[in-house]
Image 1 (cartoon, rainbow, N blue to C red):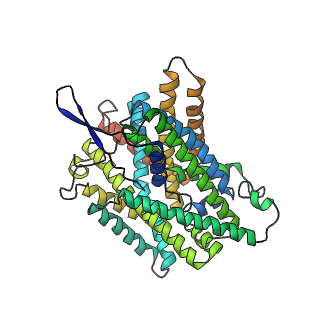
Image 2: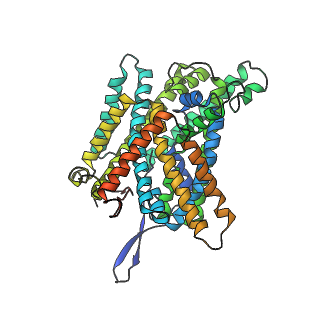
Image 3: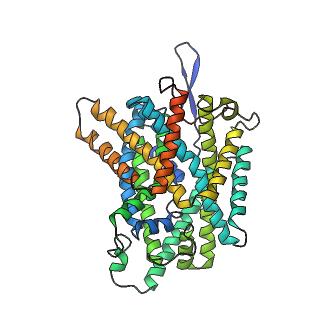
Length: 462
């Protein structure tokens, strides 16, 4: 869930003698890493656990680690491009400026897919988790309830503060610590077949399939979604050329190691092949098996609160992106470009995103929604790697091998993961991208006029 950082300002004299307000460089490296961890969420792999186990054929830990490699290489590209465009922090800007404006538009449209799908999968997961508390209430009622919760709170302009988000992250950390202790106690007390028991989460010779491994890794990318948000803070960071890159990379490493440990202990407690009562909320059952019914409820509540916070923030983020498109006349300004004067939010867009998310929650599964989200994210990641390659290697003199290898490998691995998404996700993603391309071509007269701005405004009432 986004963690709002207070932007302190400082004054300096402008050339015309007036006082200009600029952002104060007050964020240190540890602030960036903390921001990244909270945005991604320390419990990121838990909602994915069941479908990740199924998709990877039992090699879920390996998929998380492989995804970390791809994200680390991409993180380097994000960090480097943030040095070139400190005020942007957007894949749309990087690709549009370094490669081609039309390709920048395509990248921005793929980002729109991410924004629209994030609240959708959060509604699905929260509804499934709520059914663990009150199974007598059907899924469709819970889906409508969470749609109303997200939408009404956003319409009232209610936001979580930085302190609340930090406290929630600390609470998640406590729950994770309890899980690790409980998992180790459970494993030590449970009979197992030698050392092979501890290596099966990495490699199971009976179920290993390379295509399944790649498919699982393409899904595991969702664990890291949000790390790129660090690059948007370039103007508030001490020594940004060093710290943005380090902060992005360190965040990916910390989340990767923490996620791998969670999935590893989860697989030791609930081995591959043992069916889950509910695939979407599988990790909750893992927690209950390790400790008992009380921890089942605690874990279920923790993940539901985390997903609800993320879904609410994602809905508002998507609404702001639609507002930016409405303001750019890519979408009808009369509807998408309006701001509620009282709460200063794009009210029409909040409702629109909520309705789309609710309808999607009835039409797609959590797994398909997650893969469709990754479809758009991987396009953006490929674009950032390509932009870094163009700026730091193709155009640079002298050319250095250190500027070639990370973006080239990062782009290739992201492409490999992208083509190994499930067929339904690829078909849905291609339809979305084709629709966006047609929209862009129509609104810009064959991509000859000014393109849409996909940079999300922090405030919509300026």
